[in-house]
Length: 286
Length: 286
Image 1 (tube, chains in turn blue, brown):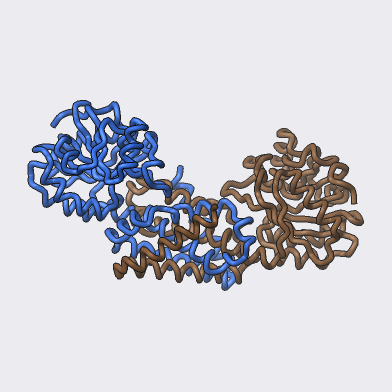
Image 2 (cartoon, chains in turn cyan, yellow; image 1 turned 60 degrees about the horizontal axis):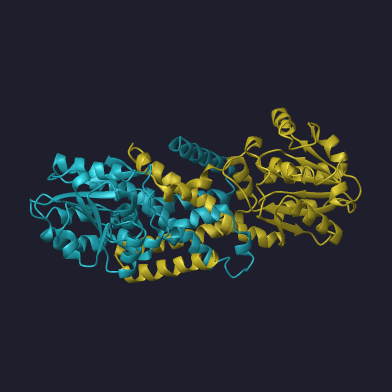
């Protein structure tokens, strides 16, 4: 495999994540090719210097690449793997930026052996989307999960790590199933909580016009990720159903328990629980 | 009543909120007196120029004041109202900074008629606490709820509005019960959700050391207010039990509904719900 500096990297999907990765990699490789069906995004990517070349034909972009990065919603990635794999050069590397890994890795596992594969998940989502939101610095200092398959060569993992570091992120190797379990609680559950909060405000206090004048930082921050792109999130939730459902169940029980302590006025138990939780969060962020 | 510029303002409790208000008001009134049992906070407040005078005796501070602002946790405020009211000068104004209003206003309503009373709630909480976190600019541009009682004179309301604006905030008159209902959903519920999220991570993924390496902005923001001061939050929850319990119940049902759509793989219904919620949040923040 060629080193990154001599590789052509083709990024499929110039949304927030793909666009940002393209912009971060320009100058670190032989060339960055952007592929998107949206010609406006291609034009803007060229104008902003986020790609060296913009291509609207997937096959053309893939055939030119030493590294292909799929940066579309998760189920689009799953749908693209077979097609893209068939066009890839021998020993080229296929990776992705999807937020769930198990089903993507399952699809990658079926590709011909001459294609190298690895899963990727940069931990830097935003509630905004589209190429206009792309930012060369999006990955700076962030953790970038890499999920190799048993068939992934050391050389391929090493090349993926180099790419991640060139984008400014820190690679972290995590097994795909384990990453889906962790992401279910710390990434996908927060989305469902944010949505439930917005839904509650909508169902109860929203008719009062004053509510949006008094809303403060707590609501704004807790509901932020409810603004995430719906297609992206539906794909994530639908490809991590078991872990997400379980996390929501545990969380719903905890919420009901806390609310019950409030309803019963069991101050001592409430104080103990909240103190433990505050301490726990503090330790996590030390 | 004297105008603000000629008034002595005594702030009882130099934590985050009281300390910040003191610092914001210095220079806008005759003098700002800080009262706190914690002599270290008093010393620091003087050193930072956040008060003109620091007093550790409550009665002394209150007797000197034209305006007394109670800035302790909600149930301390309720406990202080009677005592402080007895020491106040005729026609002096008593206000507070508590996050729930109904029970505080109930206590204020029992004071002698020669004391003016009004409830206050600045919408700018933080998850940090104590005088060291105090910030003169905390109130800048924020909404500051004022909840008058039927007995509150126009002059007293006007003086309170002047004080709020001198601190940089925008006064908004809201009936106490209505404010507790609204705050239950948009301020106290987010706290319980943040705590439930932290509790879920603690109960499920926490034993995996990787989880805190991959945790990203969604978890951090959604859990932020779980770091709030526990005594402050227990007081808030215990004085807004009915509204908080109801909001948590509605929210728990919504979470269970969303999780059920995920579990059943009912993609169409899930997409419709999430699209509506995303749109709703967008409208609220336009």
